[in-house]
Image: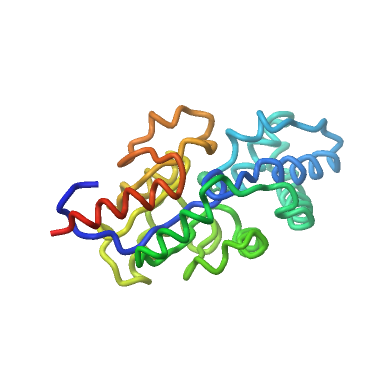
Length: 232
Ligand SMILES: O=C(O)COP(=O)(O)O
Ligand SMILES: [Mg+2]
C-alpha cells in the first residue's frame, strides 16, 4: 500500500478462513460422505490444508487418501453429490465468525468502501451461509467458485468485481487467508492483505506475496483508512 497512491474504493473479501472458520462444517459434511463409502472419518488437521481450492479439488484430495486415480474418477460424481447433500444439511451449524469480522466489515463500509465477497465455495453454500451469519447485508456482490468460468487463483472473479463496480483494480483491495487469494489479486493488479489465522493450504502465511499481514478485518480497515488519508 503506497502512500500517495489512489484511494481504495472497494474491498473483495474471502470467506473460508477469512470471515468464518468453516473447517468444523467441512468435517461433518466430508465424514458424512466418507461414511456412505464405508471410509473412516478424518480429522480437522487433515481437512484444514485441503480447504480453499474449491469443492472438486477438495473431494478429489479427500478420496485420494484411500483411492487411486481410476477409482476416484469412477466414484467422483456420486461422492460429490453425497458431499453436497451433507454440506447443505449442516451448512453453518458449526462454523464460527473470526474475531473482528463484523466490526471490520462495518468499519470498511463506514470508510465508504463497496464490498464484495469472492469465495471458491459453491455459491449454493456461500449465499445461505453469509445470510445465516449476519454477513449478507454488508455485500453488494457475492461470487462463488462456480459463479464464473474460472475461480481463484485466476484473477477473473476479482476483475469481474472491478468491472461491476466500475473501478480500476488499483482502487480495490482483496483480503484473504491464502496464497490463492494473493495470486488472484496480484494477477488482477489489486492490492492484497492477508489474515494469518486461516488455512493457507497448510503453509506459513509469511510465504505469501501480499501487501501486508493484518491480524483482523478491523486492522485491515485501519490500514485502508491510513492509506486513503495520504491520497494525492
Ligand atoms: O475452497 C473453498 O471451498 C472455499 O475457499 P475460500 O472461501 O477460502 O475461497
Ligand atoms: Mg480462504
